[in-house]
Image 1: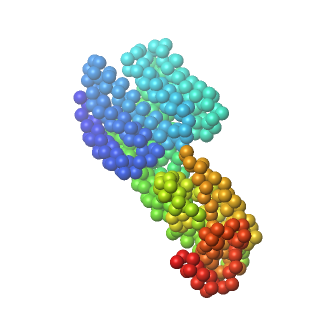
Image 2: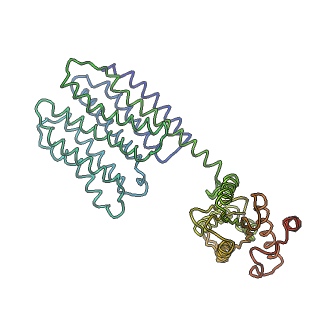
Image 3: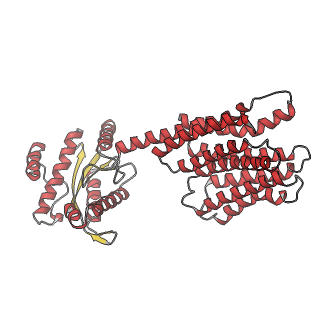
Length: 445
């Protein structure tokens, strides 16, 4: 038994447990694939306990150990591919690489190093990714796809050149496969997490060091045979990657919590807190540049009847659809926020003008004059819009919000008296802020 692998098995087992605990509280698109990958690494160390046994037990221990190490890297790499859930070809790529990895290691362990089957098996590493990429070229043109293809074509070429060397061909082939897999992990994580955070830097550097083990190790072994390096040194990159991945999960959780604090959970739009912050910043920019901004406040008409008739679930779907419609009708530089139950607010920044803002408001009202198809229901909702512009109507945030609110309530009150909304201008009469506030209080009451 190879008892020297037992401490590494215990350490990786503890790190895998810690990773699973963090991942369970922070489920992401990547965490499931990472967790399976770490289970493969734990299996690698467990199987390596039996590598020194004579006969079939040692051979199977070596096979499972090498295969699990290769599978772990392929799963780490695949989990960081951004399009993998949407494109079936990504799953075919994964299955092809796992099959090629298993078949090649099977031949290295159980077959002679001169067997003819090594040639087609080595060729699979390049042919499988290339075939999948060519078949799906119209649907997937992502650069990472072609990085995988180029990387594994280079691996196939390397294997065909070295695998039949009489003295160390098998060792070079094994290290070549594992170097390629973990260098691919380094590239994929660098691409997926291009940010200056501790988790990104530690994980990317850890994978680079992990891949370097399979390059530096053979060089030291053959060029400097008297130089002894403890086995634990070669396993340090694994622990570095595990810590880095845990940091990535925690960073993603913090970012998710920050997003929840500033966005509406139902529509995904900015909430009142973020809306007020953006409005304050927009006003400050407008003051410095002596430009205009406009604020639109929109309240849905008859939304309570939707909830009472169809239920709150359908009402939520209506709010989501309205948020999507509003977002598609303004510029990316503008802000659409959900600031109340059925109330939305829109900040129109420079370049804009009161006339342009009125045109946007009218188009939004016309947009909701059309029936909405929500599941099996056709639902008609309208909207009342109040508009206020800076600096014409108000010169500070509070006054601007009050002006837009009161004009919206004025229009809503007019509609409730069965008067066509087209008879009432979006800006409406607004003789003074104080008179408007008194009128608004009467409408609310």
